[in-house]
Image (tube, rainbow over all chains, first blue to last red; front, side):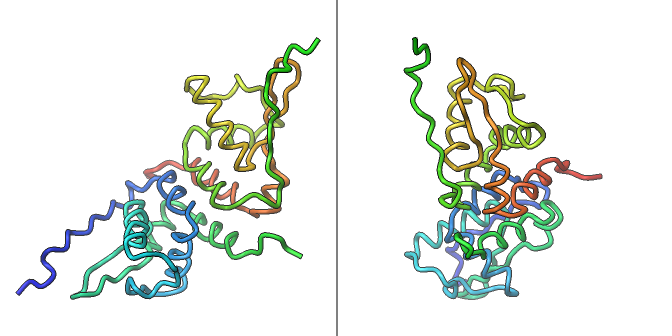
Length: 112
Length: 112
């Protein structure tokens, strides 16, 4: 039995193939930054459990952009798709970058 | 005499109106990162003096994206347009961000 055989294989770029342009473009969207920030605080998540309010097709698009930019890793386990941040690859290729972006995002726009 | 009266006024967003999304989108392009990195090392530059190889219309587009994202300030002095990085505004709104991005860009993609 192959109940999930119709799902296309997930393609992830090699760590050395990640580009700063793709990563910055991926992180220019606030929903995608929320996904990355959520993963940054966890060991991984199932797809339906992110604190974002977008249509499933939109969420799929965001995951694809993040995956193709090399920010996240996704694996199918039965009917669940498990998503993790590519911490080690990102830290090696872009030291300090993700932390700097997430730190800015966590600050109020108009500090008192 | 107003020899440059036909040039439209340059509009710059207020520091408080800058968004992380606009800044990351602007910096997702390598030519725009080269412009910002060049300004980061200088007090300002005239428009034709950046080390980029693109058509004038393309360069104008890149300057507009950078200006509208709040990364650069441009002023017309006679026939010259002078461009500076908005260091103070960027450091206040996005502490450490520009440095982190430029630092990554300066590193080799495949360290030995």
